[in-house]
Image (tube, rainbow, N blue to C red; front, side, top):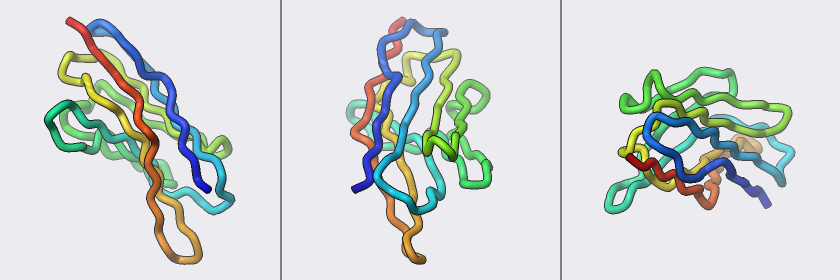
Length: 119
């Protein structure tokens, strides 16, 4: 059973920084893309950043230049460094991982971690 454990959320003032981590366990299969999504109250879940198995990255326009996604394949962990945080970054952040199993693709979600940015 694949499990994703997120950590690093919390309360921070505007302009501050946080670092989210998401560690995957329970699988010996290769992990493909890893990413972070977020969902603010009353809004749809949106992609924040993603990173492929080869290290290519993709960011939402709203976080470009402020957030950095990275991964440690040996630790099966993905990170999101968030700098210059804004109040509008307040949301529940979810880790998403894609795993390939005998040619099939499966996606898994973490339970989410709250990020609150105060003015």
